[in-house]
Image (cartoon, rainbow, N blue to C red):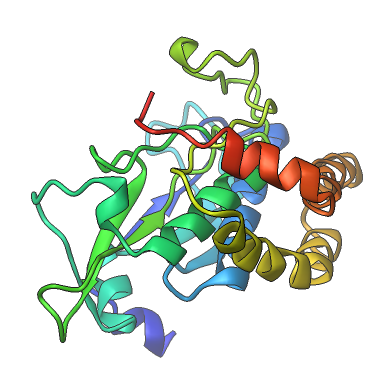
Length: 242
């Protein structure tokens, strides 16, 4: 409670409808944020909350539903010793190279193609306070269109050339195989922790848990084969944003 009181402001994420299925999508999105935190503290913190809804017009009966609180960008930046990058236009290759590679591979793991660095679409950008010339970090957010969540309303942008959000598409820029393997090894070391985080979450229904586990396990199966790693992350890296 005291930590929340010290925060500047908080965003609230709740289901669009009051049905239990919609609540499950929110739980999945919440879990994706928890997965990001396994890899880096340069991420948004979230806190699950049980909300009580009461319609003032009395047209809908009071009900309870899970949602989550979302850390403000200024609080996140302060926590990691950074400041948010404002209107400055920065390309993907002008950001912290290893961190951006990690984010791109994480987005591939969850099958999220709904992000772009140059226009700061579903990413925030922060730079260390103690260096005006340091390359900034990209901080991903807004994961409801990813394949790991697989919400009914989610569809990929037509120009991406994929049919559904569960079709993985790598949006990372060219790296050497040595660079890629350095990051891939971090993911492999976190495999058990990632799967346990999903499997051990009590609010996720059995069917949703099985779907999410199977989908993420598919990623780990892929990256255990060096031929796949080279093909996906080196040979098929992008040179410009689609």
